[in-house]
Length: 286
Image (cartoon, rainbow, N blue to C red):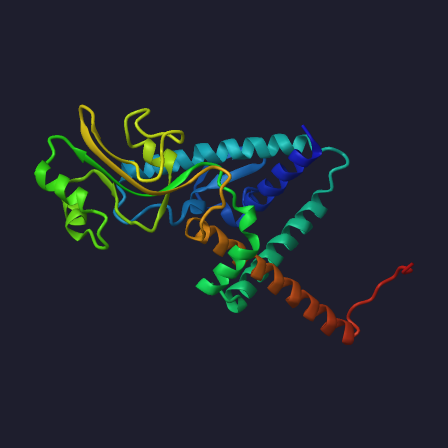
């Protein structure tokens, strides 16, 4: 086993199992299990028994936790017996502790200082600058889609509603689908992956190869009636519309803001401590 693996295993085990060793204050506690020089006491299960737990359920909780603890203690003991000679556990613990402290402080800084509001104008500017990075890997469509279980309630009315569904507010169709459809998509502005819609239909009815602008089909199998109307298609390698990658773009903008915020905060700290003579270096700059 590599030093890296042993180090990670030992580090996590030591940080989470530091209460395994015997202690004088635990002598009066109920001992549940021992593995070599490590012991588990009942007091370590405090808070694990919901109010009203029966004696039988409590026994199950104790047994489940104890069996998991035994296996964890075994792997910890085995790891301790096989520590590579060149593995510096103290340094690993120090580094991991420092990483946890820094991560927690950075989280506090971000929560307090980061502007998490991304306006539509900011999204547009980001999109126009970076849209070449958002080529589609699979076709997408703007469409209406309905999947109605058979027998279709009021089939004549449904067909009429479907025929008139391109109106700005197909409210009656939406009400019908809410009551009768197993699945429906009735937002004309949203984009969907063709493969996701195809999964809701019989195999081969709609594919990336046969989908096209103005496609309008009504088909059925033994269980459902399907309606599918396409308003616009974007093919593979086309640039994704902003509305399709909007959430992804928002996350990228916020990540970049976070990185910039932390960099600026660190530089501010550096300049401040440099002025206070709290930073010293002991090497020759060449």
